Image (tube, rainbow, N blue to C red; front, side):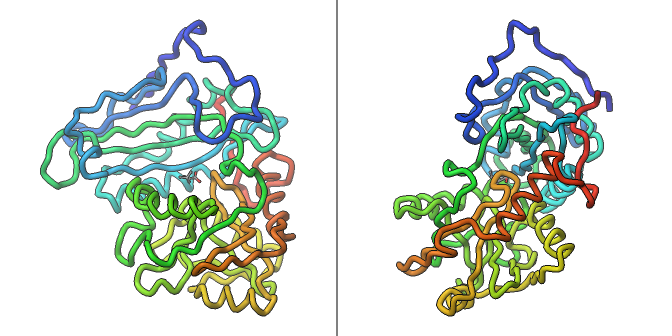
Length: 358
Ligand code: COI
């Protein structure tokens, strides 16, 4: 398929943000987007880089009624010698996995990654310069066929938008307070927890709002069956360091297979740090805390990068971890991952790709 490129004239372009320290997360968008369409009869067509503008959707579009929608989160980083992408092929692999789970049409991941690089080449002046900032990339894939029967759509739209961002949490790289959620659940065994589908995020809003009212930033989900084992935080996978061992939930279908999660595991193993991917009961975490063995806790994600967890609230009691300070391993992982992303540390794992075509 041919990629059409239709850029807008200079005088129609938006103003770049003047103060990068106020970027926040996902509030402003660049001038152009990538889009392509699918029809059961003809496959993918009309791939184009064009002006960022509202989508035209029929009010009966399947996505608006039955939520057949998936997305990805990626970032482009400005370095001294160009702009980097971090393991981008993994995001498109995961988008394909989510598409399969949500019965959406397969697409050519190489074509879309190449189109993304074309888009970043056009928008490269939007990649922010300050430390800790990046250009967030949001591939989004929705069902567009208009009908009201409950069945998979025969038409789809896949698009990519870009947003210059700072830290996901307003507190920056500082410990956050997380509430262990023992009432509501995110995903059950056999459900769609591993797919990056929009409904998972909609389902998280109520509990998160309740937690925010109590002063926490987000919730840590427990398993749906027993409310016993820790799962994920919705915008990040979770890691607990107990007595020197790094423990994270296994990928059994209810949590998102995070790319940063996988990178953390590979980095720890390469440093000889013991990592266990296993069911971790919240009681084991609390016991470790009581016995002074809960060394650190942190989350990982594209938006969240590595986020220290400084406090866990569980059943009305707060447990402050590592004196609400960033732990040693948490800091090291943050420095290493961001160092690789910003081209300051050697990329021994082959994770970096050039983001632009020039
Ligand atoms: C990401 O980390 O990129 C995510 O997609 C999580 C969130 C902002 C929805």
